[in-house]
Every structure is written in structure tokens, then in C-alpha cells.
Length: 427
Picture 1 (tube, rainbow, N blue to C red):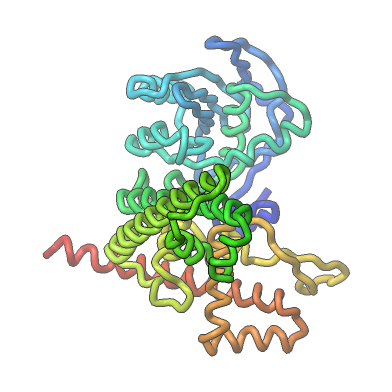
Picture 2: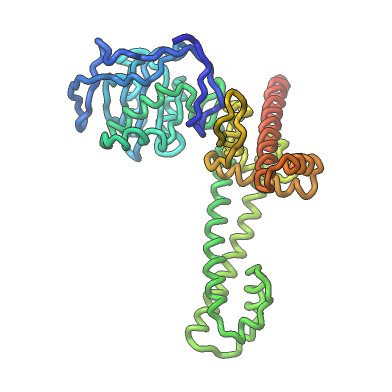
């Protein structure tokens, strides 16, 4: 097959809307020099069988591909050749010595083009760090990708089978994202990104814990006697009601269940206030790291420090994406939903439920904010409404525009940092 442009319509996580390379399909049922191996325990047993014919090999990535299924203390690796045949599988411990043995073992089968690790940011983190430090091309394989076709065909599941599927998935899709959300020649985790992610995860934990406490407190407030409830402010916010309850007449006696409810509510109020203070401290840390990163996203209407930090953590290096690919990544790119349009563009589009929903939520809040105070956003919304779109559809059109705005700003910030970096090093 000659060089062509391939569109991956079923790839919501694809880095970029299109990819171009020379494609060669394996139309032969089995390679004469390929003998797949089946792993049983720590040994291997030869088993002949046809290799998959749907995998792609690109001239730019000639060589074997290694798929790794990581666990807490062990990893299982499988090596696939350029035709998808499994050359071998083995188990290794998650340790410095185990990683070195893994590298030596994989290289005995020939040149390695890429390493695919399922969950390179979680259980496979240490393996990905070791391989990236050794100069290997390490790709992060989403756990949702590998089991789709094989589970539907009831092919079973084991560590060896999973690693083989990861290897073939890495071989079939050369544009899988690099580990640690890096791009270009950069590899390995970024220190500033790690700090931002740690503080951001802590903030998420605070929000989750506080929301649980608020729900428990609301339930107990509803169970209080009516004479106590009538003394509280008639508002939805729970903090003023808890503060008013703390100012109650403590000399008055209540029955044992009511007394316990009041004690629990006092404790919930103290815990909620403590979490509020901790969140403010975490946001201050996030702001310091965001300012140090040189990001100017906070200058955009509708983005505060918390939203900017979330964006920087989830996106990583924006060079991983094209403009359209970023829209597909965050779910703001609509899906075509029309028929009989012929050679023209799709007439109708529908809501895209995929993509990164955290970034999509940021785009939604940004759109709502800009519709209140940003004339350009109001004009886009009005034009969409004049074109026959509903309010919800017009808001999604605005979100798609804001996705481009954020992407361009992140690319501009990165270019500014790369331009200023040589000057800082020279100084």
C-alpha cells in the first residue's frame, strides 16, 4: 500500500486528528521465521499459529515492540516482531536488577523500536522511568484499549496474554502518547509537572473529603428537632447554618439522640473549616508553581488558579497534540451524526461524551463565565443561535472555540519558555 493519510475515527485519545506515514499491511497468514511463544508460569512453550494480519509496520519504526503488563512487584513483558508475531514472554521483578534483566532479555530478539507500558503513570511508573532514562521510546498504553476485541472473542486473560495485547497495540498504533505526557525529544517525568500534579491531587482529595462531610452534616441537620431548625438561617449554604448552630444555648438539655447529633455537627463544622484552610494553602502552592512555570492561562477570562493547574496537569506537554487533536482529547470536538450528505461535510453533529471530562468541565465553566462578560464569546453564541442551533448546541460551539484559545495560549507560552531558556543559561 502506498503512503496515505489515515484518519482514526475510533480514537478519542489520539494525539492529533490525522497521521501520515508509509503503511505496509501484512497480508501473509504467518511469517516463516516467526514462532509465537506461549508463557506458562516462568517458562515458555513453543506454539505455532498464524500471526495477526491487521497490524501496521512503519519504516520509521522498524524493529521489535515490547509490551509490558506491570503490577506492584512484578512485570510481564512480551516481544512482538514487525508482523505482530510474539517472539517471547517473561516475568521480571520491579527492581533495579529486574529492570536491567528486562532490557537485556528484550534486546536478545533484535532492535527495539518502542516499549508500550500499560499505566506508565501508575504501576508501570518505575519501569517507564528506567527505560526512559536508558534512552528508549516509551509509550503509555491506556488500560481500556487492549481488552476490547480479545474479550469480545473470549480469548481469555492472563499476564502473558495482556502483555502480548499491549505489544500488538503499541505496534498497531505508532502515535500512542509518550510516557509522562512528554513530547519531542523530552523523556522521563518533569519535576515541575510532578509537583503540580501532587498538589492538585491533594486538592482533589480535600474536595472529596469535604463533600462527604457536607453531605453527612446536611443529613443530620434535617433530623434536628423543629425548634432547633427554626433558629437556623433559611438558606441553602451549610456553613452559615453550622455557625448559627454553634451559637446555640448550650445550657438547654436535649434527649440523648439529639445531643449526639449536635456533637457530631460540631465536629463536622470543625473538620470542614480545617479542610477549607488547607485548601487555601494548597491553592497558594499551586499558584506559586503556576507562576513559576510561566503560564499565562490565568489571563484568560474564566480561568482561575485551580483551573489552570488542572489544565497543566492533565495536558502535560501541549506539543503532543494538534489543534484538532486537543479538541478531541478534551471532548469539545463534536461527532458527525448525519447521513445522505454525499461528498459534502456532515450536516448534523452530536454531543461527544468522550475525552477528558475534567478539561471539558473547565471549558464549560469558562464558557458560562465568558457569556456574562466577554463580547467575543457573546457574539459567537449569538451567531450560533442565529444559525438555528439550540442554546446547548451554541454553548458547545463556544466551548470548541475556547479549546483552540487554550491550546494556542499553551503553545505560545511553551515557545516563550524555550526562547528564554538559552538566555537564562547564558546569563
